[in-house]
Image (tube, rainbow, N blue to C red; front, side, top):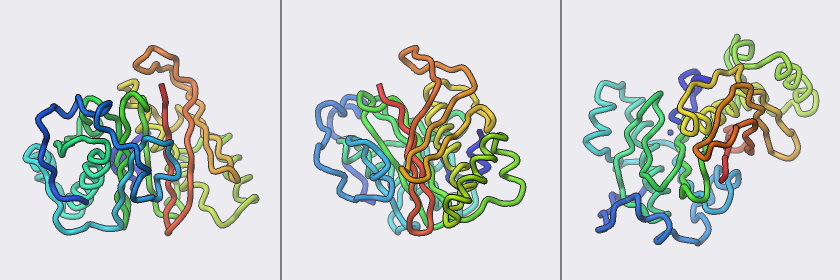
Length: 259
């Protein structure tokens, strides 16, 4: 299930923060802020309490990168550099709401960012939108978020990403509500599932390794996993659950795996 096929970006504003004396990995349980997410972002409605989110509708001035991040993105085109920087601005702002200082968020295997030890998170970006969601590791085991433009996927993509039963589901959904681009929603859901799966298992998950069931009225989705995998606690992963919404010209999905 390759994130490179979508526009939702990485398994991806405040000024820089001065780090406190304690290490970032030790902060989550002691300095977490309990007030509601102040931004009330598009993603916040899809995620459980305790998950902090931040978003930008574009690329604001003043973005900064740590030297490690600069080295990673140095050869990228300007568009990629801007979305990379803005997504990390969002991630650092969400981490700050949980008491974590600004730290480098360098992509690791398959582009998944390396989060501070006590935290889990996900970043996303598409045309005109960048966002991040972060939680304390004790509250959430893994999560994935994805944003896509609310428009049909390019020709040929449905056949590549949708299993036969999912293609039948898409036809039923289109009859139920023709105002939603369900093919794009399916694609986004699979992106969020992959972003949740990979930190847990550390292995590939293909588009045909998960069957997505979409509830058109309740805004929820379920992924039935067809590939064997276990989370960090050794539990067999059979399903992942999430939510979806459409708003401001975007389709957004979020998948959360809890303890």
